[in-house]
Image 1 (cartoon, rainbow, N blue to C red):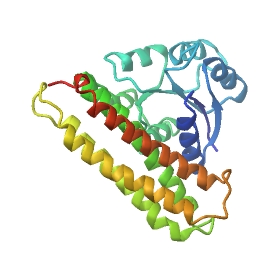
Image 2: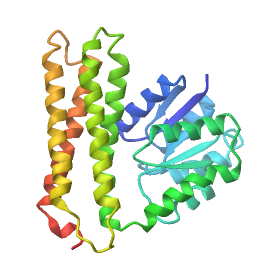
Image 3: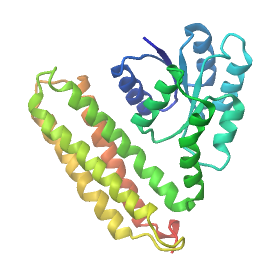
Image 4: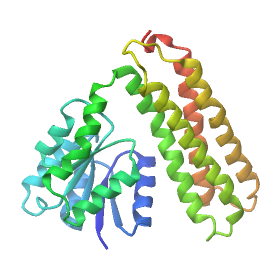
Length: 277
């Protein structure tokens, strides 16, 4: 089975991405900073590295340069992961030695396609850059404040979707098939929130057009509260479980991210000076 080294300092991102990769049959090892990533690449000889660029201490840029300068590790393909859509970041990633580039919040299907393309040796240099170039270019052209707001909101939504999918996959084997409908509903609500946020923040006709805060709040607050209530109801239906149970832990992660969404919306609504118009 292919071995992937995930170099990521954010605990929740690390947990969800590593678990989803393992579900797809990959062997995943973890490093939480640049030096650990360099050491793990040398000792574990992974087939591919997922490198977060924003790492403490030695960042992903430096770690990648060191790995590509070392004869032991220079042939290991690296996919850069970054939450920043700054102009030139994609080019900098390739200059540092990365073989591909992907944006956070992670679209798992898109990332999986890139991983499989590299590991299957079916991609050409042109095909590697084709999709990221369009994505980064469009993000770089976006207005900074709405783009940053969208990024902040989408992060928790992507995690809610990911954990709801993990729980849905686990439920039948754990004898919790009766929970699947509620878990699917959580995922559907998160997808609905994401579509509405994109419609409000990305589809404005004029650069200086004010953001419709009322529409933004209504698109997030009500479904987020429903997600929280659903998580609490599922918890109440499982009284025999302990706090250390993985099912409960993932429900709590979903609930925490839904609360984070609500907190961010209230903060934005009470500080209109952050937004154009």
